[in-house]
Image 1 (cartoon, rainbow, N blue to C red):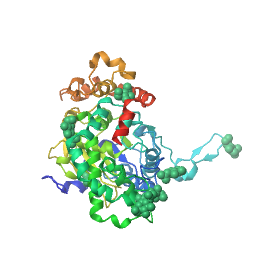
Image 2: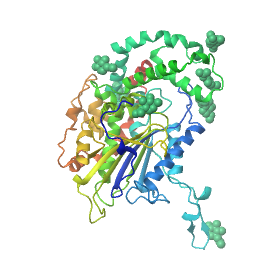
Image 3: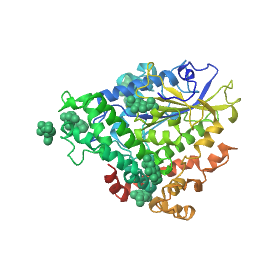
Image 4: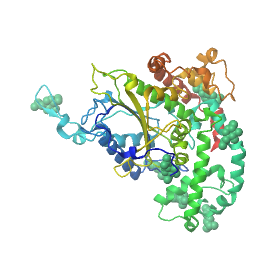
Length: 472
Ligand SMILES: *[C@@H]1O[C@H](CO)[C@@H](O)[C@H](O)[C@H]1NC(C)=O
Ligand SMILES: *[C@@H]1O[C@H](CO)[C@@H](O)[C@H](O)[C@H]1NC(C)=O
Ligand SMILES: *[C@@H]1O[C@H](CO)[C@@H](O)[C@H](O)[C@H]1NC(C)=O
Ligand SMILES: *[C@@H]1O[C@H](CO)[C@@H](O)[C@H](O)[C@H]1NC(C)=O
Ligand SMILES: *[C@@H]1O[C@H](CO)[C@@H](O)[C@H](O)[C@H]1NC(C)=O
Ligand SMILES: *[C@@H]1O[C@H](CO)[C@@H](O)[C@H](O)[C@H]1NC(C)=O
Ligand SMILES: *[C@@H]1O[C@H](CO)[C@@H](O)[C@H](O)[C@H]1NC(C)=O
């Protein structure tokens, strides 16, 4: 790993006992699944086990009584649904991953949750006191389904679609395309059951690697397997990384990272609520999503400057989380920490988090610190976060459908207008950040996003869908 001068000794050291975790927001990838080339894509048993194991790790980190990073007031054994919020797009791979994760985050409690009726009879929940936790559909990424080859196809964000697709017309793409033609044609005997000769190219760099990667895990026999040498596999993975990274993020066309921008808005909204008072709920937010959302966020938050490994597609069941914490004590209704005493750190586990694969702390925003003040965090995130539907419509250049309501305020941005974000009120001064966020409509914005993105689903067969055919 190419790491900058950063103290990773911090990373897995036990957390200071004086610390109180006020809130956590997590993005989690699904577990092992079938290949994207055959629909419907399914989570496998192995994949369910991976996310289940990850849930178990985070139970030990955040939930259990006496946990190292116990989240303030979070119930340890019997789940209190208002304390946690779980979201996933409408997609079976992601929805089921979320459920498997929750099965170990809050395992069955046996008779602990037994209830007595008026007539004296006692009842416990089925399956040895199984705990049912709602997984809400994530309106902001409803169509980021694993059945889509590329998430932008479902984002409905006009400017992001245009931006991603422009990668296929860039010089760097064309160069790689011709340089790798022999490589892809050479492995045709391996993939010819799925890809024809014209399709065996860098254009399908991700789906080809995905097909082979899945086959190496699941297929006992693979035709012409001898062609899949270690160096060929490394090459195919690196090419898939490049392909997907460039579709997810481009420094000179920030709107391409729309998924990361919306995620950043969700993180800010969640943590901003968690810091507001001792009685705030929910404190633990969990979202299941695609690797491309990780990528978009990694680019926006400049994580490649901490490690170039962030440009590699994250493993199945990877997780990243933002931990909002304070060293001030005691924390209670009557002594709630001041904003300046609250800090944030970012952690990431590549693949299933476990005691042997602990999440590591990485510095965000190209800084050199593993923990930054909440105010600094907010001001950095606000540079790219999209918090409400008005900002979304403005940045995406969408003016019809549910965005019609904002046409006057966004001034009808053109489809190529990538650098529009500064207009949408994101550059609010740091001072009074909490107030500023509320003023931006943080709370209502989430519901508003539901409406906007609900609209997208109805119109998704538009230009975007056609363009994605090019992209795939
Ligand atoms: C996914 O599961 C369904 C049945 O549950 C099956 O018909 C389909 O072939 C599976 N998809 C793949 C890619 O294996
Ligand atoms: C008490 O009420 C429940 C629910 O109606 C019923 O299933 C149970 O048999 C009753 N117990 C007795 C002792 O009547
Ligand atoms: C935004 O514009 C794109 C491209 O014109 C279109 O595909 C998409 O459906 C629009 N989304 C909304 C919410 O209007
Ligand atoms: C990034 O975007 C710019 C402007 O659209 C483009 O010229 C450049 O080739 C892109 N870079 C990549 C790697 O896609
Ligand atoms: C794929 O290529 C191999 C090796 O050239 C050949 O034996 C096989 O018949 C081909 N399969 C298909 C479906 O074309
Ligand atoms: C792996 O097996 C599946 C299901 O039999 C098949 O569709 C797929 O083409 C195989 N992949 C490779 C690379 O052989
Ligand atoms: C995660 O693992 C994948 C697969 O090994 C790798 O390509 C990627 O660079 C890793 N990411 C980080 C941040 O370590």
